[in-house]
Length: 329
Image (tube, rainbow, N blue to C red):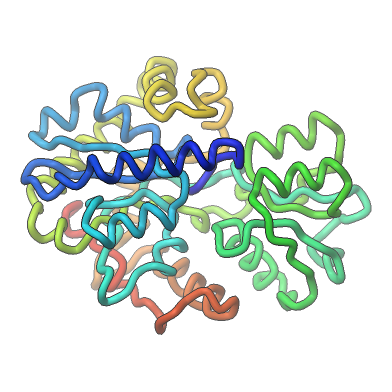
């Protein structure tokens, strides 16, 4: 998922590029490199690393902060990263026969962390007709917003989209420049604190739609199968630790993820807007080739929405082309 401010963007890109160069050694057996943006949902990756759980499984997991998911995908396609943590809808835009990667695990889902803010005169989605909505085109924000409209039977052409980052969208809304914006925390809370408007709807009303997964290159899944299994075993062990020791876990994860989440209190506040997936939840959500889980519905939605928006260069992506749950079984 995505979450960095514009002011951090240039620094993140520079650091991300350096990190990718360092990750070029990821072909080494026993090593798996993963790129990700700064997002609370990726905290358990650092928890598993810093508690030594990855080491216990004999796998060296290298975590690289990359400010732009597209840049991380490019690094993965170039073989400089083994995997990327991002939303399943993002995966659909970049997956191709040439760039083969599949979701092997579910990390978290947005459960109130994303939302749409609106002026007081707007009381429902039907009131959006003819309005300008600020959001980041091509991002999960646009996917989620388009999903809401589709679910309500509202044509995408009924609204005018003003393309800007989620942080810029929130700033424009607070300044009164736009009547509606799609953004995320801590911007949702900021809007309420400044009494600039209201949260019209948030992602807690759409469970299972904005979901972060760990996507690994198909070559990594094939050539490092034992390492992948070890990574997943360690990761879900960390999720169990988080449930049993939330305060200790938050301190470790905040330090690891860093950025605007480096303060444990800020991390804990952001954590309220996500739901971490444990092993049982992951197995149910991903399912199997014979019995796909709920992720299949999101893949279908993603194909429809991104195609309508002209964001997919190839044809529809099937479940079997973007999901591999074999290491969990």
